[in-house]
Image (tube, rainbow, N blue to C red):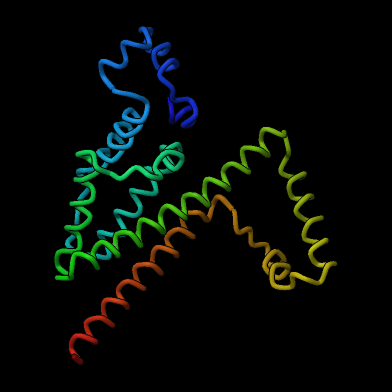
Length: 216
């Protein structure tokens, strides 16, 4: 239901209607809606538990990031309910355990390992949030019945107004190069570029830490 209609579709009465049971009978299985949401998140966390690992931390973290992105795009309601819900279910804990295991060969302190995982997850969440914003705009255009020609004409008029203002020369150059920063066909490319930057930055930070220890 959440995948099809969003997080707002989840309430006990509607679920009971879908199952053709009485609403109160659901409470034999879950204490309340909040517990149900916790179980839903944990079910999603268990979807990719059998993913292969390489033993190379950057490759494995990249795989984790890609799977997390795919999961968030597949279950778009998650971003609406994930805040304030620590992943303490069994699948969520196993997911964290396996993510930490990808860093075993680095022989680093637990605090640093957690910082690394948090950094990667924060990048993924922010990237997906941006993607979902773009998808929402696309859906709104489709709902409004706008044709591709009408969209291009509107964008052309907007670019012309930016140019006339004289305030946005760099943006005008980007649009003049026919670069659409929200283009659906380059979302994977943009995600991979950002992910590489994050992982390279982590590698640089680790090297700096090792040098500092050696100098000490």
